[in-house]
Length: 349
Image (cartoon, rainbow, N blue to C red; front, top):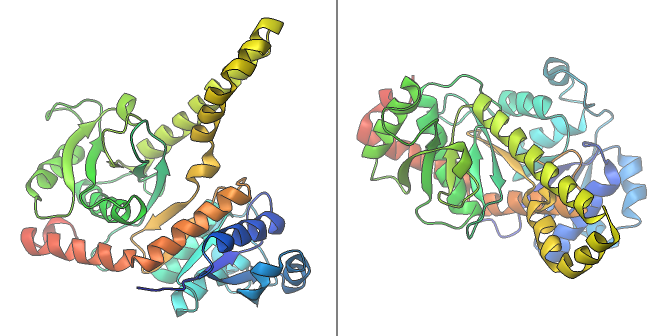
């Protein structure tokens, strides 16, 4: 176990820039004084900003990067500039062992492309998947993957996602036997595509894995807290994620409009404020910030581009936990266990 994980921070990525990334790092450090940081970006700008973060400065090292990846940059452009950009050098720090994980709030497509090229996939994993924690009505969040990295997936990919998602849930949610379900258009065994049904058939037999396969789950049950891991292809996952985010904003805007429509409504808002504050906290994406590319030979966490300092701190804490739990090793061991029982052809090409 790594007692003092070093996290490489892409200090120049995201919509909010250097100030919020450093504020988030300092907030994480205040909660976990064992953390160490490699701040990657414009050295002069970082040194000037650190004058306002004395605590963080003591736990940090700076790695100069003369360039940064913009939000509109294409992945192919980003790859060519990997050796000069803050995002590319943060990922390279994970590859060389200089950092245990990298955190960036920058361009998702560029981050995925550079991470996959630099770190490569774990042996036996065909494709990495983007996983995130989403709020539920249950006792803990739910892990959902894939959220957009792979639009087309076969049964082999879905099984690998299930193995990776369960390993992630054991670390992030501290669950010994996460409940895993496949997103489908119905819960009956005959529903869904051939790929989904084939993956379900194999997972039902994998009772030796550290997970509980519960079958299929429909979109209207994703936030109920019935399962701990939801597995799907990247197309369905991205649509579902955007729908959830849009619905959350819709509810928040509807409540805001209702509570400001009249004097009586405003009085009602004051009376119900504790309840609405609880709702706001539960739906705030900063409290669930931090998506991860699972299946790579190294840990890369994606923070939301518009995350505030609290959101960035949550992403960093997640990265540190995964380093300490050695998530990459867990995934490798679980996949090897599956191979041993089913044969390599079950999950690998």
